[in-house]
Length: 197
Image (cartoon, rainbow, N blue to C red; front, side, top):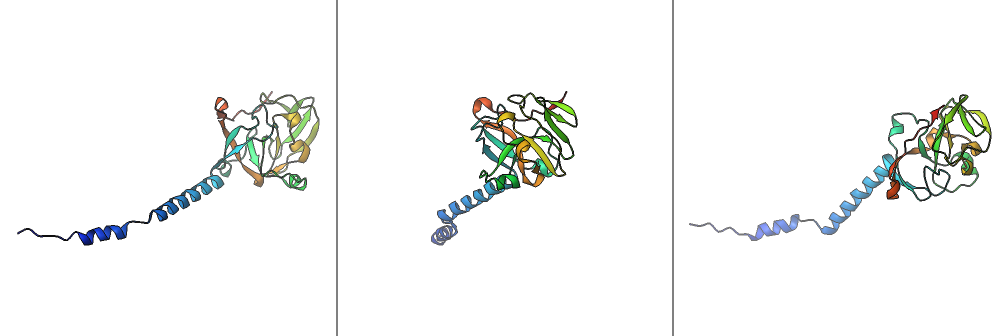
């Protein structure tokens, strides 16, 4: 004898267990937003270049990825291209930008001087192939304070940087620019370092 099974209750159960598609969309979007916020806050973010202060290394409208992890495990290095929040002096001067980008030249304890078109670190001249032209100003000598950095734009004569407004405290650093992803013909890493002559 064949047993007849009623299929109706099973169909009803399937219907009860199906989630509302709007709830699924909301959960997916919520998860994506949380992940994006977490990645942007703690790991990496995209930035664009609004000025010519870092030419020729970075041109106006270049797009970069800024990584935020390495400085949790190591100290910033001379030559790193960094993004940082405005310093107290920049805030006093009403600079509205959320962030600035420059190259670290002076580390804590370094004696920095600019003279005769050259940058000197502890009386040793730097060889800098990445700058637009030799600086046409004199600066220093100054000693970089503890937990601070002296930053200069690669377009030395058209950059509002540490030689004008002072040092960047470490806590103001957002991260290190490590790769340009736009425009496509200029894609690549940003790891050129200054050398001593």
